[in-house]
Amino acid sequence: MVLNLELLKKIAETPGISGREEQVRALMVEELRTLTDEVNVDPLGNVIALKRGKSDRRVMLAAHMDEIGFMVKHIDKQGFIRMQPVGGFDPRVLFAQRVFVHGSAGERLRGVLMPSSKPIHLMGGEKPAPPTLDDLFVDLGLPQEQVWAKVDIGDMITMDRTLESVGNMIVSKSMDDRVSLFVMLEALRALQHHEVTIFAVATVQEEVGLRGAATAAYHIDPDISVALDITLANDIPGGADQDAVTRLGEGTAIKVFDSSHIANYKLVRHFRDLAKQHHIPHQLEVLPRGGTDAGAMQRARAGSPAITLSTPTRYVHTVNEMLHQADLEAGITLLARYLEDAHNGDYSL
Ligand SMILES: [Zn+2]
Image (tube, rainbow, N blue to C red):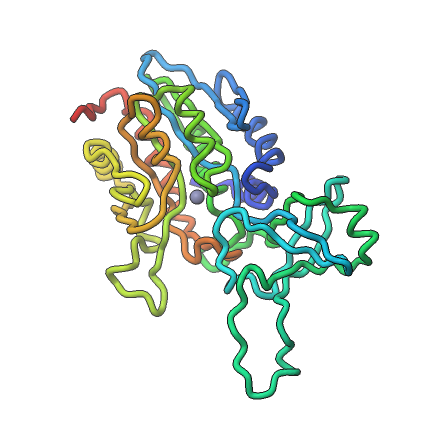
């Protein structure tokens, strides 16, 4: 399989925090139109694409469009910007990063993210305390009047990072969860024959509490729910073996447990059997803390059997989210093979 890294780069680099997914949404509407029978946008902003099948059995796929980022909270007298976090960045990884402030007038302004602490040159023997989010501000390098003219309270702030190849890996901002939008598109492209009715959903506001998936699942009322997301690969120095969760290069991850849902065990078996049958590299995943859209889908209406297919990722929720190309290929292939066989699954408990 040759991965269309150009498409992945485009999806990853498009800015869109929770509630401001409009640019990613436009891209997903355009891509899904070529792969499905009908594409709609619901009132919350989810993109719901329908691919008809011979059977009424409804399989809902969900990958979230929002990335973690910030909103402008306050602009001070000198034009420095204070931020409201939207989703969970660790302040330790934000120090001295570059950002984009997406001005309400349509201008994309580059800025630097710095902590309001004494520069190291002015410190005597004091040990610098790690910055908190409240210490951080954005410097746009502009006088206050110009900042006020271009930027409003609530404007989106995203990280200024591009997608690049590093060894056998790909590194980018917002692989969480743009890589899964890519997996969803490529699996639909790789699909040969299927019987089930497929709803491919690009959801909104996952990072602030699985909000888009909740309303989309209520509307669709799926018989089977499959979330697509990244998961931790803590296979790095300092990490204990038992805490690795997943390892890069060892295949796509079939989720068994996280703190938002327990996967239907028969669905786990079905995915695993298909992976074995088609020789697709895979690993089973238990994530002690964290969640995916499956947590909301599983509990919509009267509930549905749910699972998450995860892409193992190092350095999650930093600007250097790293994943292995082979794991990505495995995820695309397994999802396609599952959709072709989903009509055969019996997940009754
Ligand atoms: Zn995610």
